[in-house]
Image (cartoon, rainbow, N blue to C red):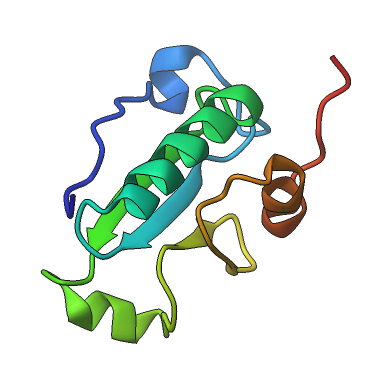
Length: 114
């Protein structure tokens, strides 16, 4: 689980987008192996990202049992932890991300009125 989840996005020039287009969100999920909680956190993150950031996100999953130095760099103290690297400012959310409203608030995303 320590690899970047493949998610090819078209560049601004490929997609015909302008400089004013929304930026790509860089999300990093820290986990400890493929535990039930880790798998649940990833599934919840994927669902939220598809619904609220469709086409504008990149998820990187870091297994701290394989890459502990990355966890130290981002000062991770609990697992699973989601880190929003981009757009700034950096934000962290701890847990399995099952409470969508709290995750949206933590990421500073506004729920869309559907």
